[in-house]
Image (cartoon, rainbow over all chains, first blue to last red; front, top):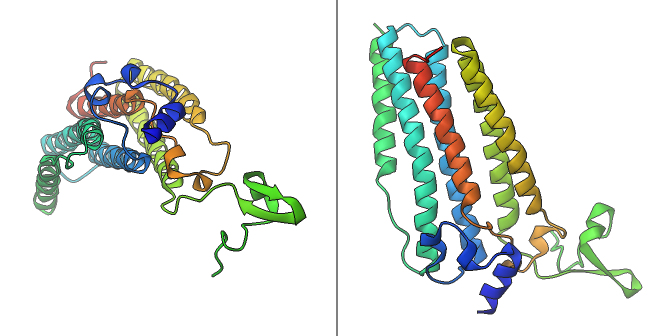
Length: 132
Length: 139
């Protein structure tokens, strides 16, 4: 309980005013170290999203030896992957935070596998089409 | 390698600001440090992420400028506005004492989910801009 009070005094807001309510209205304040680790995981997902985005921009900007259709599809797929990553960053952060507050095991996600598949498909397309 | 805590901590330079000065020129840490350096790692993660945002944002705005000036200006204005808000928000989480000197229960956590949501929206907007750019922007 004292831990909860200390953290509330640090954040400066009571749990009822913290958004999203579907996260903060449940459970108790977790160990701040876990919360900070969750925050860093969120940022790692965001950076992954930005890396995919940079890849998409590069496919579009660089004059690759592929047709416009292939470049558009590859760039589009990477951009959609980046969007998916950004959404996963937010949803994953919120789900993890709630699980931490309720002292439940952290939820898993299948987004990583989808992203790996998307990146592999784009790499294969560029490798096969680009080497012709 | 000597243990800074057992040795009484660093005695010179700006680190004096965060080390309590005791009688007899003996210095001891203000509190037991967080051995995981959570606050430093989180702060550096924010810096890496914001640098990545700056680089990717500039690339996207430049690419959009070729296709549509209006979209590029809108993206740039949005980016500047959010960057200013983000700077103020992160500065508010600034530390008076060196974070590793804090007890774990006094580490500063996120105020709520607004900041992650805004960062996510920023990344999503950039993704949509690139997606539109790849498939053809309205000029």
